[in-house]
Amino acid sequence: MEILVAGGAGYIGSHTCVALLKEGHRVVVADNLCNSKAETIHKIEQITNKKVVFYQIDVTKEEDIRPVFSKHQFDGVIHFAGLKAVGESVKEPLKYYYNNVLSTIMLARMCQEYKVNRFVFSSSATVYGENEIPFVETMNLLPTTNPYGETKVISERILMDMQKANPEFCVSLLRYFNPIGAHDSGLIGEMPNGIPNNLMPYITQVAKGKLNKLKVFGKDYPTVDGTGVRDYIHVMDLAEGHVLALEKLTKGVQIYNLGTGQGTSVLQLIRAFEEANHIQVPFEISERRPGDIAEFYADASKAERELEFTARRGILDMCRDAWRFEKNLG
Ligand code: NAD
Ligand code: UD1
Image 1 (cartoon, protein in one colour):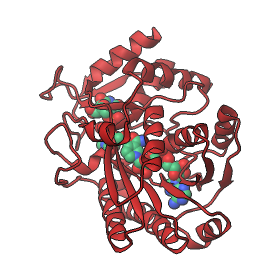
Image 2 (image 1 turned 45 degrees about the vertical axis):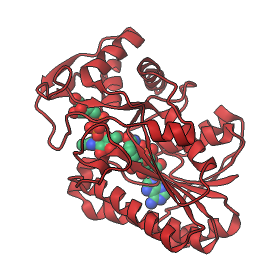
Image 3 (image 1 turned 180 degrees about the horizontal axis):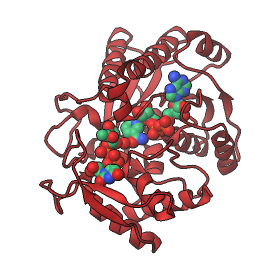
């Protein structure tokens, strides 16, 4: 298939390009590089020894995206082109609603006009809100507490309504848990701007000496050791999940959790990182981070049943690969 990967120069998008190319699909990337670098496209080509067609464009702009749809006959679209900093979304809500919702509308509209009937969307476990664990696809969604989360809920809704009105249009809504790690070549990985908000990039930068000490946000949660528990999934497993979701998408709206079904606490992740890489991660316990949930992980059984998707890589692989990439950054 020829696939448009919107946001394909980013963290999850670049790994998904590698997985798509490995399965013999052709890849066209549309990315405005607002949170990524053009050199990532060359790294994808280097890893796979295949060509990637790249357009540096903003997918919210019709005048940018229409020529791409008229030039190519896409078999499907994967939409990663979103902004993702939760804290920033609270401070600058309009920027988030504008970019994340309009990118969905624009790509869906182009699909409708150019008769592209497969659409895979990057959603998030954040749409479940503070539900019971494990999170199951059939749950009623609860409020998300921040504009970023709301853009995911709204985008899901838009795509579901669009499918209802156009039965030949098929949508896969993929609710990611916590992607970490990197491709095992060490060539592509997560490159946060400034001080990382998320745990794994913070750990790798502390290990490298770029940051002093990790702050563990809270040790009084009702969890195994009092620290927050998440379902970390290797980004290459997540990427391979996209290829399966795309290939198996033949009708309707399909919603899948992409996680492992296993919870890992902050302290367990630190220990795993130290064990995998034989390096210390200095940390101190600090206050809870406002808005954090104590514990969540996926019920991963639907993706396993229907997509034959199971995450193959474990926590130690995630730690090893994340560290290899960080070291390569120089
Ligand atoms: P990322 O920032 O690395 O990648 C997003 C890419 O989209 C970037 O390359 C950016 O330049 C591009 N982009 C953003 N707006 C664009 C626009 N208007 N036009 C063209 N390109 C644009 O983020 P990521 O971690 O790879 O996340 C990809 C998607 O998955 C996002 O939608 C994010 O919300 C979602 N998601 C991420 C996580 C996570 O933990 N990383 C979890 C759940 C959901
Ligand atoms: C974050 C986002 C969420 C998004 C998810 C997936 C926030 C508030 N939420 O959530 O919307 O869907 O990523 O990428 O940003 N931690 C520390 N010290 C740190 C950083 C994190 O102790 O310096 C802890 C957190 O309290 C949490 C765990 O590590 O318990 C994971 O944090 P993080 O990587 O930010 O992911 P989420 O909180 O799941």
